[in-house]
Image 1: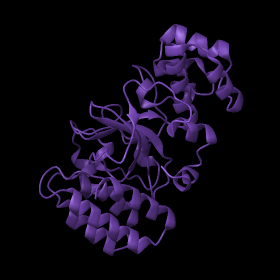
Image 2: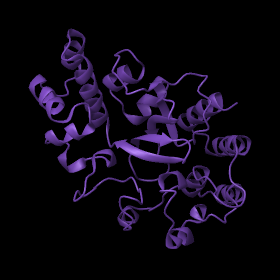
Image 3: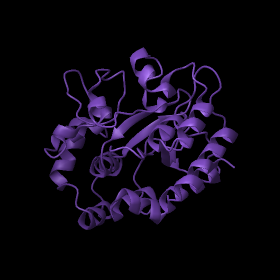
Image 4: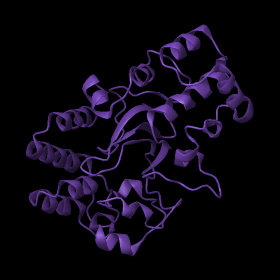
Amino acid sequence: MTPQVFRSFGFSPAMHAVIAGEFEAPMRGYQRVTPESLYPYPPALLPFWDNDNPSMLGVWQRRFIDRPPTIVSFHLELPFAYEEARNERQFLLTRAFQYVEARGITPELRQFLDAYPLAPDDLLLEAVRQHGDSPQGLRLFSSERDTLPMEVMQAGDTYTGFHPVSSKRLDGVYLQHPPGLICGFEFDPDTSDPALASSMPWLDPDSDIPDLFRQLLAQGRYAEAWMTLNSPGLGSPGWDDASLADGLRQMGSLLRDPEFDVVVAGWLHHHP
């Protein structure tokens, strides 16, 4: 994650400090991604950390469509992106819960919270007292109650975000947010919906995904091409590392966007 990429997401210095390891927050078995972490994650993911589950934690990029990025755990064996935090504040608060649960309010944490205010000590301690290091502690924060992420959803909760996980809500609500596109890795692999596949052929298990990508790219339909590039192709030919790398290069050469070039270079660095 280069400073240029951080700027493109509007991340604060606090977020940068945590992800870069300048402030060591306990991460439940996660470790920072290194050049040796050659997992086949999709281009939509910009990973921060990984673990042996295997899964990776990072930012999910919704490029070319009007939806904000979100922070997800990407489960590599399914494969499937699950929303952990809808914004930077939620992500940092859950890191603070884990830190306080493990170490308490230390001078290091106090220094961090003085520089990047998140919450008063008594509220952090109460969240940990009630919920341990669980992200359920977000429920105690009035600023987050109406924007809870998937990770915190319980029976009876209403999800108001943009992450279309079918196991939580297959009601078409996300399609009301133009242009109403989702990619295969955002879609619960245990659930199929022919209506969605008819309007988004990259969700159709019988689609030739790389061929569909080439067609969409040639037509300048970049949002749909990006969705296709981040869909697994469950039936006939899907992506392998070589064809995915070629597709990314093609998209980058057509867009001529310095920010997207960073995404391409970062993915190719991990998938030579």
